[in-house]
Length: 162
Ligand code: COA
Image (cartoon, rainbow, N blue to C red):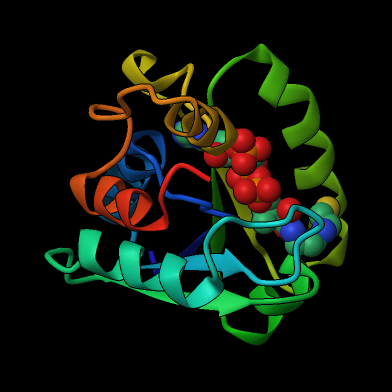
């Protein structure tokens, strides 16, 4: 197979152990894995794009074929303009599938070349994790250790329980 350059895109506000599991597995399947942090999202993020990139950069610093970028606008445009050969998505539950299949099929119409969407089943240990739930648990004084990498817990502590 020719060089495969995968994209794993998301808001990552913040990155969780669920995302990290997908990143580790996707990096072993690709020559290069690009983690794309979405900039202009309808969600109002807790962390700035710079903070999210900083956290992900620290967490993936030991993974030689992983790089972190930010993008705005259409995912398909980033894919077409940057030689991405596959887009990776994590599937946690059947509910994710309904949304994901629509997005994958719509994006497929927007891709210029032959770009595959690859779904990785989330490790059951992480299947209940989402960024908003982590933020809620933290805000209400709960322990988020085990749900996010240590660096993220430190960044959250710095933000405070606002
Ligand atoms: N482990 C843990 N959490 C996971 C997860 C996993 N494996 N997979 C998804 N999640 C969580 C995320 O933390 C997020 O939680 P939140 O809603 O509580 O913040 C939620 O599931 C949704 O995540 P995801 O599906 O990755 O969506 P996203 O909003 O982070 O990013 C994009 C989705 C970036 C891929 C999509 O919005 C996009 O492509 N946007 C660009 C615009 C565009 O092209 N639109 C047309 C699309 S057809």
